[in-house]
Image (cartoon, rainbow, N blue to C red; front, side, top):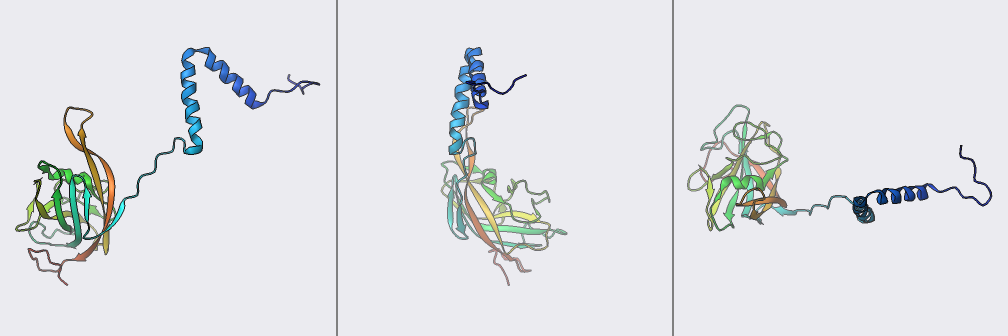
Length: 232
């Protein structure tokens, strides 16, 4: 049994015992020295944030009507209209309100892009009961693949976006709620065009939140107009 230290003796401190054990472990195998260097380097970073995740850049807060460059798009969101029937293909469904976020869209890419590329560039998170055209809830606010429509001169589902053209568009979704908030926030994400890490192809990837657009909403009147005018 270990007793109190005698005259001239000093009991090793816990720190000293820990250091001695560490040295013994490092010397036991040559490869342990490499591990020790890595651990020491990590410990030295603790006062400066250590292993904490790097803070995400705050996205730009944007008002409706402002053009946002979120590669590969230039998107200007003006307003949103909603109601049980908005004309065209947006006919009345029991217990469902149609929502159209209206604005203009332009591609900044050099080639024609599939409209589905827009899906991962836009998120609407704060609309209660948000769903696609078939009533399936939106996952993480992502717009459904078939949400992009052209409005003029006719209402047509838009499958591809050609470079150099500006489209009057509506982003379509539905909600099971009977009313829609006075404004909704739309998150826009930029992407990078780079080679896939899995195959030898180029693609738009690495989404980064760029802007949050606050869009006012209005209930559409009972009469459908092709210009999507919001009636009192």
